Length: 252
Figure 1 (cartoon, one colour):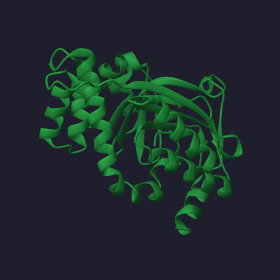
Figure 2 (tube, rainbow, N blue to C red):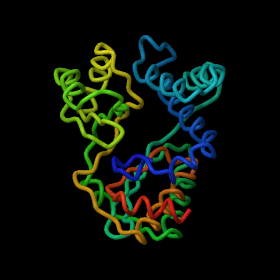
Figure 3 (cartoon, rainbow, N blue to C red):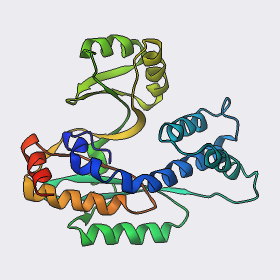
Figure 4 (cartoon, rainbow, N blue to C red):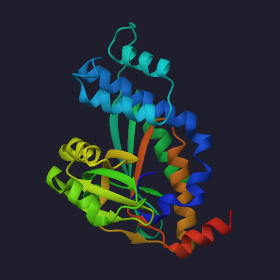
């Protein structure tokens, strides 16, 4: 789940990561196939594929699976890989907003499953554009604080196009234009700073605080969406306070 809110690091989210490992593998494999289809199987000449492979390796996807996905996507196995990107917009509890990013080989199936998950879990499908304007596409790099200060990180990435460094408690989050993401990654490597994730994501312009009851409904909605095979990412502007997070953890 991508939401750039404190609640993204709650135990609630960590507890279900293991059960979703296989699904995570499938999403990463799908990204590799798409990148290979668009730019060919050569990692050196296809930055998108190199990035997809790097992410898969970080998540311990087996090398054989990665190799097969590259060949399949590039058409070297005779199989046809044809995925379509679709974005759904949703209103959640207490005025929260969600963007649901899908990558699918069956648009009708994706639409049906996403709509069903939303309607069964307290959300409402929104008209195109009525939610997306609340978000901007940004390059986002997340890294552990360790012994770093905000100034340490900012000095390392400022000349690479970074717009801001956000303090998220245990981590720092660097925002940039998506086109500057590679430069930010390179600057961190040059400075010897390790990072956890680097993605082009949809970042909310402002966040909506949820009370405990709304947070419970919201988490149920997000979990249902993330269980769908065609859903690649869910972005939201929901913000859960430390108190709400603690109450959620106690009720589990």
